[in-house]
Length: 235
Ligand code: C5P
Image 1 (cartoon, rainbow, N blue to C red):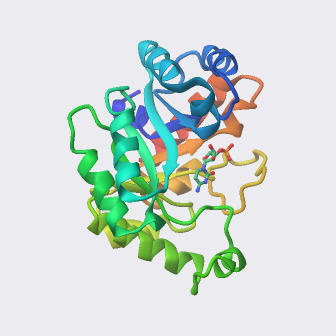
Image 2: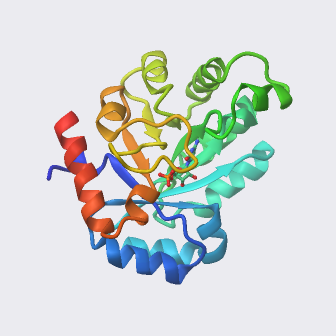
């Protein structure tokens, strides 16, 4: 399979500790190249685990969704620089000063590339309004995507529902990472705005994040390979 296909899928390691992460990685058996490590696992297992996973040949997407004052976020970017993690998330709603400080810290050698989280997929219009944001989630996603781009952030995370609009607003170079992906016939779980791997790629996604359809499959390696094949056919 060409690199172009391998680099389009990240498997979400949504497990609580190092042991469960390594068990899952054993079952994946090299059937994906990218692993996404989120807060749950990172707070428990830290940079040691990142090093172990890198040693096994995986590329790491660190989904820490940083959101704090500019100085603190820049410091956090520096703290993960040198771990070998290649992608790191920050919240676009942290605002332009925070995004610029993060982007500046990410210019150092060995720093990850940054992705901005726009609107959490768990938020609908009512949740946004309760948090003081007028307008629809789609409008807010586009506003934040433009803000992130103009603040020097390399890419963003958005749902399959917005990926086409974000792609046309931000251009071909922006990295668009999309969770909420479900192969035909698999359980939707708690995701609300889902699309198949092929649809998501066709709408302009750079990389798909897939968790449960792979990690809870009876054969995770087989499930990952099937998604990679579908991606390959859609490209
Ligand atoms: O199991 P599932 O495929 O739904 O996992 C999707 C992954 O993407 C999870 O790790 C989830 O935290 C993450 N994610 C998401 N929606 C976002 C950002 C990240 O589902 N907006």
